Structures are given as C-alpha cells and as structure tokens.
Length: 518
Ligand code: AHR
Image 1 (cartoon, rainbow, N blue to C red):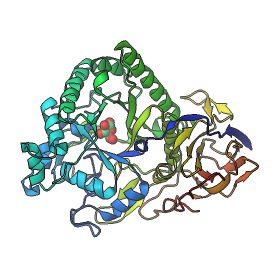
Image 2 (cartoon, rainbow, N blue to C red; image 1 turned 90 degrees about the vertical axis):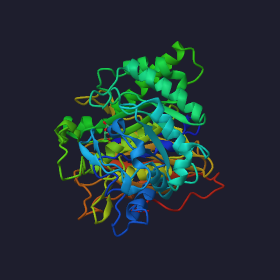
Image 3 (cartoon, protein in one colour; image 1 turned 90 degrees about the horizontal axis):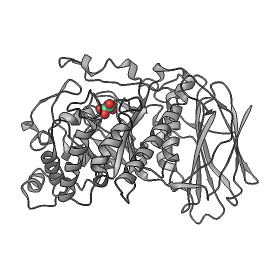
Image 4 (tube, helix red, strand yellow; image 1 turned 45 degrees about the vertical axis):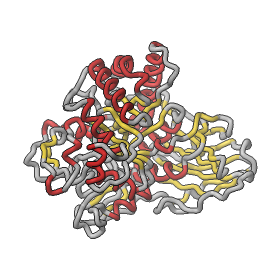
C-alpha cells in the first residue's frame, strides 16, 4: 500500500477562511430558477412560490452567498422587467440561452428567497448591452433606504427595507466572443472603471468584482486581466475567474488532477494583479472571486448557437455526476482553501438542476447529487485558519499534468472550538493509500468523526429512483495514537476527518450534514 505523510501544525497558517469561499450561483438558465428554486403549484411551494424541499436542501448544502442572475444571461438582462406586478412583466427573448424569459422572478423575489435560504446575494450588473446608468439605477433600487423615485418604487413593490446587497459583479465573461456585448480588455476596463466609480457614489460601502478570464485556455488569459486592471485597479476589490472541468475531454488520471489547472489559474491571476498593482503604485492587493467553478460535461452541450427559441424542453446542461466527479469537486475545494489568503469569494456553478448539486423534477421530488457531499462537508467544517500540510507522497505525470500528488489535502484549525479538520482526496484509481499525519503540535488530539465518499464502481450516480446510491459513510480505518493520525483512503475517494484537542473549551458541534454517517 502506498503511504502518504503530512504534518499538521497550527503555526503553518495560510490565512483565514472567508465563509464566502462556499458560495453558489443561481442563473436564469434552463431549470435553475423555474422548477428549480421557484415552482408555484408544487406541493411544497410556499406562499411566494419557492420550493420548500429545495430550500431545505440548500440550507443543508450550506452555501453562504449566491451570485445572481447570470452568467451569460445577465449580459442582455433588463432588471426593470423583473419588478412590479407579476402579470404586467414583459416576456423577453433571452439571447444567451435562446429562450423566452417570463420575468416571474426578479430581484425582489430573489432577495426574499435569499433570506429564506439564509444566504447573502451577490448581484451582477449587465455590462454587455447596458452600462453605468442601469447599474446605478439597480443599486439605488436595491440599497437606497427611501425617499428617491427608485427606492420608493422598491418600497411600493413590497420591499420596505433595502435589500442591502454588499457585493456586485461588474458584468460577466466579457472576454468571451460568445458573450452578448463582448468587449476588448481595454473597452471593458474603461466601462468597469466608470461603472465602479458611479456605483460607489450611490453606495460607498459595496464591494466590486471586475470580470476576469472565462477559463485558462482563453487566448487573452492573463493579458485580459493586465489590460483591464490598468484601467480599474483601484476602483475594484476582486478579479473574477471562471473554470469548468470536463471528464470527457481528457483521460481519467488527468481529470482527477484538474485542480492543478485551478491552482495554475489562481497563481497566474494573483501574479498578474499584483504586477498591475505595483505598476499603478497601489497600496491595495486585490483578491480573487472564483465565481463560477465546477465539473461540467461541457462536450455534451451542443453550444448556445445550436439552441432554438421553439425548443419545448426547458432543461439545459443537467449533468448527472458520479463519484469521480465528486472527488474532483473535493480536490477543487482543497485547492480553493489552500489559496484562502487571496480568494475572498468562490461560487460553485450552479445550485439547482443546471450542472448542480441539487436536482428536481417539476411537480416531483428533489435529491442530492454526488457532488453535494464534498461541498456540504467543506462548507460546514472548513472554518477558522487554513493550514498548509504539504503531503509527502508519490507524484506522477498524466497526459495533461506533471508532478501530480497521489493524494491532496488541506486542513483548517478553528481555535474557538478547538476543532481541526482535515480534507483529503485519493487520486489513485485502484489502490488504497495510507495517510499518516504527524500532529504532535496539537495536544491531546482525539478523533471526533471521519467520513469517506467512494464506491466500488466510481461511475455510480444518484438519481431520482436511487437518490442515496452514493452517500458518505464512516471511515472506519481512521485512528489517533500518540499525536499521529492515520487513515486509509480507498481509491478515488474524498474524506473528511474532524479532530479536537484537549485545550478545547467548547465542544465541537454534534451534527453532520444529513446523510453523513457518524
Ligand atoms: O454556468 C453556465 C455558464 O457558464 C454561465 O452562464 C457563463 O458565465 C459560463 O460560461
């Protein structure tokens, strides 16, 4: 059996986990909103038409922020269409996803849903077909307390209190030729700068996200950021990054190593942003918002240009995820946490039905996909300070990546509850790996809980008929002795170990995400 070794020490701190690292994304796309979060007439619908069964699963998944309303959708969106009396709202062509948007859900409904889901909204403005005026109008509508035409309009529409949306994205993927209103980096940088300046005049307390690269293969990757940040560096707080990984475009070993590309992206964009910061003599350091990331079987999607407005099936990219996909999602979460010093926001895309951890049937049940579990466990337990653990383990090359560690891992240390959490993946396709962790720097360490997600057949999925085919189960081969933690990780697996130290003055919480065997 292969052996991997690592060291757990509270001094090896990367930075604090910003809870917004566990964000998600709701786009007006396919069935994410309609028959996803919203379905009046569904047996579980509340008085506002929100599905309670989905709300329960969202609270269990535990996202902290939700980006809305797109995505490509936002680049042609008129926010005013989605407010006021529902029966007066216009039906509009959605150019991004070749559909007709009814506008039954708009910003007021979404803000109300966020309160019920116990999440904070992250709002994107349209910088594709629109500009400064529409962005400041939307901000005034949402955040100004009262006494102006737009704030009074919100109040007349039923939202007496401001929505108080703190984080705003300046457009979406405007580096992409597929984007409605696609721009050059300079054009975008100028528009982002002027929009940011005006938005801060409306509400100086907001945080702003500039639109970065759509993926690491873009021909403008990094040069887009360098050029646009020259125009807006001191006016924004975050640079966004999007990345999706497709198992169908590569071999399995390379797919299992996808997080190496994410790390390369993060490090490249941090270096680029810091370079511009130095050039413009700024004292500020920008953080990243990885506001779309996931596994997406993208090669199955024919592309938006092949969609037609008369398509009667609203479903779009409803990927069904297996255990391997969940392990890759786990490794992407580990990579995000390892860069907690520079990542302030990350949103798994998307939340329901569209490449999502939660699936629904219209009029029927909702269930958890395999990728639900790594997110739910990391969101619940990975809090406090991220600890660098530097696994010492065999490394291999794949078709797409060199120097791939067989296991990957990160730890978090929550001093307040004296809880140490270790997240790990085993990328080995056929072999168990024994993980030995030197942890003498934590006195009186005890194992609280250890769970693992794996399956004899890693192609196993959860479906409506078999919603619990894949569940985390107790990792029985885990123990602590004399300050050394040992765990045997099965092939293609995601595991979470929670430990507590004798210096604890608080008891660690007793509950696990539903489905996590204890
Ligand atoms: O999440 C699906 C789509 O992927 C989004 O609309 C877009 O921003 C990205 O290309």
